[in-house]
Image 1 (cartoon, each protein chain N blue to C red):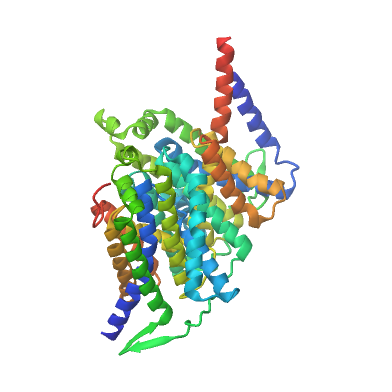
Image 2: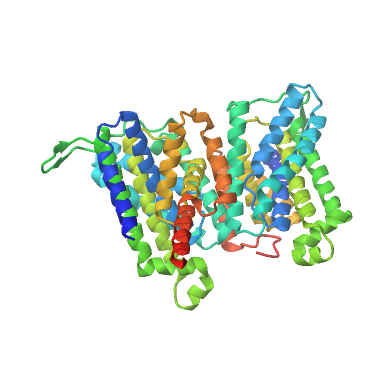
Length: 321
Length: 287
């Protein structure tokens, strides 16, 4: 356990030191990896801990992005208020979509979310008065500058401060989910995944807990959307289609849905590897698909799950000897 | 009134393409218990094959559709053996995820090889229009409807009258008992999957001649195929036929009288209502 803590500490230090002196392009990749990690974590909670494969996570990401963009451009609300509001609005729609969807099970849930995802996409494209349709929304402001003691005024137009903002939200997401899963509520969720009927029989109201997890999941997806919108300062419906949901799902499965760190590892590797290999972007989807197929067939627990198994089994065999 | 009749005709022709897609999905689900999200990709590949055979090789439209269907049979068997067979006794979710992988793989490959632009298929029949009173009918739409009826009848007879069809029905009813009675499961599964693919390829070719051919063309029709399957009842052939026509009519009437922008949303509203109110569907016997 102390070894795991040490590795964790080293990674944390590296994440804090690394951005200084890093070329802009790599910093950009780190920011992208961070935003997609938050989104993947939000989906990972559903896939890994409830066994629910949702195909509309990108819709909540989009709802967060549009909420934040509209609040800051049309109502001049500061980003620092728009960010949590983006999460809240996304989780409000999370209730509307989650409540009926969660009444269905397994593949039916997935198909239901596919349907809702399509409806949200259609609204993004067709409600032109609100979203400007497929032309997209330009001119989304960067987060306003903040004054910090010792550090002075920091503008989030620059990449390094934005990186730390994303890292902070990612850390909050990660630790919140860890606390949540370790709590009484989280344990109830696991029991629901393992055997819903039994869980109901011992007095766990499955629907309530599932909906709660869905609300948490969509809240963080909304935060990720807001961070995306104010980083690129332009959003359009193509970023929030079902293919974005598939993309996120692939990251979760690749990293491993059974551990919270899995979606983060999956998102980071899948954001950075294609770039590191200098691969043309048009091959990206093909590579993602091949990775997904190979992982499902040969590494069903994802890379983190596989690593954990190896590590534990080695330790165990040592213990025996 | 004339507009109404026209909408009915359009609804029935579109509906017949949904029937073709949904039939494949429903037999694959009913017999293999697989929810195949890659079905629309086979539809797309069928459309491209038909397009190239008609446009580049100059073959007859129907011959091209037949060849596309033929080609999709070994292709379907390959997919089944490579991806679905290893997961046969695994969780439904891994099967679902593997089909997402195949979907993304096939669509991204289509994008790479064929480009993302929409292609127009010109057949000798393309511009032929008939007027029946006030109703306008284009020849490709008549072909779609007629071919669908033929294929549906063919599938029905195959399942009802042949030995393999009997084996398929037996497997759908009780897999273990069928195996004990000597049904070769591997063969039945491959055949079922391949038949579904052939129907999807045919639908793709027929629709490609009416609209355009492009890499993502299969996604929406496939989702609607699922809506039809769920509306009709998972695994039910009659359900798929009724559901397909109902969805086609709903879309064309809804598009004509309510909103043409949100025409694609009607399917999902039906989906959500059915799953909430009558999850076993119209003709469903199990769920």
